[in-house]
Each structure stands twice: as C-alpha cells, then as structure tokens.
Length: 283
Ligand SMILES: C[S@@+](CC[C@H](N)C(=O)[O-])C[C@H]1O[C@@H](n2cnc3c(N)ncnc32)[C@H](O)[C@@H]1O
Image (tube, rainbow, N blue to C red; front, side, top):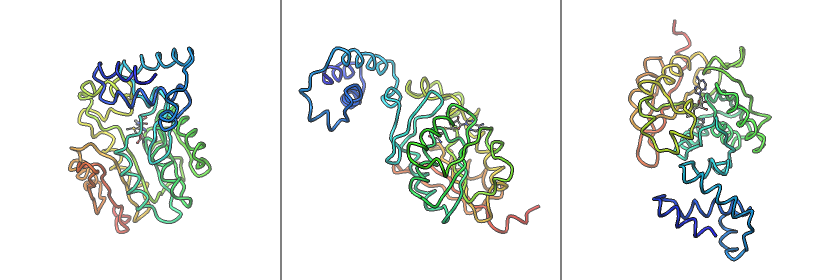
C-alpha cells in the first residue's frame, strides 16, 4: 500500500517520498518500518486505507511526518510533540554531548526554553546522578515536556517552571552548575522564507529571535553569571552565522574561556562559556 503513496509524494517533489510513505503506513498499521518490510503482503482494511489517505493529505500540505505521527526521535529517545513545541533537531544533539561532558558529578542544570524537554531529558537519561530545572514561557510546552520526562523515567529529577527566561527560576533555586539553552534564534524577517514544515508548523515562539536573531542571547549572557556557580558553564545552541556575535555577548557579560563548537557539518553550532571563580568578586 505504501508504494502507491510513495509515487504520489514523489511526483509532487517530496525528496523523502519513500521514507515518508513507509513511516506513515507503518504508523497506521501499528508497525515500524522493519516489521512493515517483512509484512509487505499483509492485507490493509478499509479503515486503515482511509486513515492513511488522511495522513498523506496532511503530509502533502507540508506538515512533517514527525508532527503527523506526534513524536520525534532525539538522542535515541522518542519525544512527544504538540503545537507548542519545536520538533527536536539532530543539530541539537551536539549541545547534549557537550553538556554531558561539562556537568560535574551530582550536578544540577537549568534548561531555558525546554520545549519538548529533549535537552534536559536526554542529559538526565544519561546521567543518573544529575537533576535539572526546565523552563519555558509556554505552558503547553511544559505539559508536553513533563509527559516526556515521565515516559523516560526522569520526571522525579526534573522540575518545571513557567516564565520569561530567568524570571521562571524560583527564588533560592540558583546557582546552577550548568545552564543550557537552544533559544529561538531566527531573524524575525527570515521566518517567512523558511520551509513550509518550519514556518507553518513549528511555533513562532520557538523560532523568532527578534530583529537580529540575538535577543534571547543578550538576556542569557547578561543574566547567566548571576545564576551560575563559580566555575559553572553556559552552553547555547546558535545559528551557523551567530558564533562571533554570541561569543562577543558572552565576553561583554564577563564570561570567560569562550569556545564556539562546530557541528558534524562543519558549521558553528554551540557556544560554551565559563563563569570563573574570580568573577564572583566583580562589582
Ligand atoms: C528553539 S525552541 C527549543 C526547544 C527545545 N529546547 C529544543 O531544543 O528542541 C525555543 C523554546 O524557547 C521557548 N521560549 C521562547 N521565548 C521564551 C521566553 N521568553 N522565555 C522562556 N522560554 C521561551 C519556546 O517556547 C521554545 O520552547
């Protein structure tokens, strides 16, 4: 059944037509693509055929397979999605790798703008000694993040708070060993030029970084030193052309040992900065 839909999507120019058709057919039939491959001859009932046709219509409007299925894999874990959450991207896995190295034993981290919770949940799933506070301005995103945390067995080590960046952090919670964030960083005027999957289906709140794409980094840079333990680090994901600007913002805020890390594609992807011990005596 999926082959017919593959051809339809292919004729419409979908580059991932075969994969999309297999994933959506498998979803409707309750099979992953491996099982589907070994059950090619399984008869499809009318209800399944109609359901698949509905899902394919959605795909043809540009909605991603992950949004249609309602979940996306990140760091080897499945994350549920809703209309308020960005789809986790593989690019963000570098931030998790770096955070796992940076977090001290028994460390506590702050995840600003958690969305699905993919960053902090992946970290906690790989570090049974760690705990975290995850924040977002969007309540629906936090509800999804909590569900994901429960699904992956880390909810008891992950607290949630709603609010505007550091304004969400309850009194007495700081300082943290590590701050991580993948904030919205697209230049406002560029959003309309993005692929339909992104501009129409990812929430604007998760994309829009203001007129120059740097607005959240200004806040994170300015506030991070107050919320970090001496020796603590802040790690942020950035757009490919924002490395220098974000490094400068962190430098001006008094953070030190600033490093811009590249992703597997050779593009600037994460900026890391330290709050040094000596900085606590700054006026
Ligand atoms: C680019 S998404 C990242 C989501 C998730 N951390 C990830 O990496 O997939 C940015 C997130 O920041 C949240 N956000 C936007 N403005 C915010 C603000 N002023 N304060 C806190 N969170 C905010 C959005 O709701 C969204 O979940």
